[in-house]
Amino acid sequence: MQTLVGHNSFIYGIEFSKHGKKLYSASGDGTLKIWKTKNGKLLATIKGKLPKSFMSSDGKMKAVVDDNTVKILSDEGKLLLSLEHNARIKDIRFSPDNKSIDLIKE
Figure 1 (tube, one colour):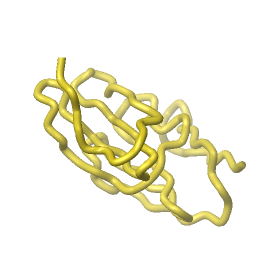
Figure 2 (cartoon, rainbow, N blue to C red; figure 1 turned 30 degrees about the vertical axis):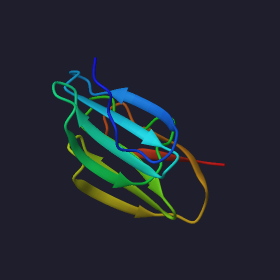
Figure 3 (tube, one colour; figure 1 turned 60 degrees about the vertical axis):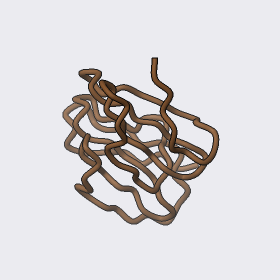
């Protein structure tokens, strides 16, 4: 068993990738971290908080909320799309075909 060290606050969400090769952790420090499960290597750190439903159904995209921006990321952490909004977002839902998202406001 490995201990992954890198967040500066409490962890409020973790999820494995669809194939179990990566682990995503969200923290009160306002970051999403992507880890390689095989050796615990930190692959990426993205500023932003995770909504409840942050992963697409195919596991290839993630969503994070950063201030007035929703960022859609690849499973490696590469920015695919940035959407501005003017409300507090509490959740994001990818459509079943992953071609659209719904922003659920508070």
